[in-house]
Length: 239
Image (cartoon, rainbow, N blue to C red; front, side, top):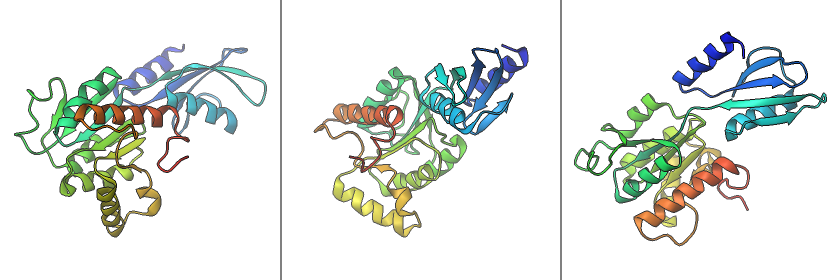
């Protein structure tokens, strides 16, 4: 690898930005590619670019065949996945360590200092702010999941609105079907489109009959994984 490319990759990693190093097997030609296009090196055709970016999105290094008969090796360099949780509730206590084991950086947002404590959430980054300004600082990206668990509209709904207008790959909201239907009506009145609202996974988690906070946490992490690894089949409303 060229030293300049290594420096660029290290800088991207420090800034928690995703980037792929792409090598042509036949010629040894190198490129750097991120989620928006080629950062350095020769251009790629549309088909090859989509294949590289899909590898990057799935965090899967490996070879791809291009339309021109070339074989490229894609090495994905991704920052950690992030899980941003709104609400220091019992389900969040169960979900946080599970998500950390699955490789997520976990950030908990809750202005209620009595709930968001180090004793209840050991090793978790906590922000004692209201959700909207906290999310403004965090800037959820395509490797971020946002889950609202407070069950309080004044906390959850501003967070949902912000998350839906970000590239976050997963937006989940706790609540019954009736609660979620009412929430969607309020979000629509607040100016969100039907397409934006359709991105919400609500009630949050896979439908596995979960009852306890731990079971709900399992269903949430399972659904996040499904959306990350099988994005088409796992979108809200997909059959």
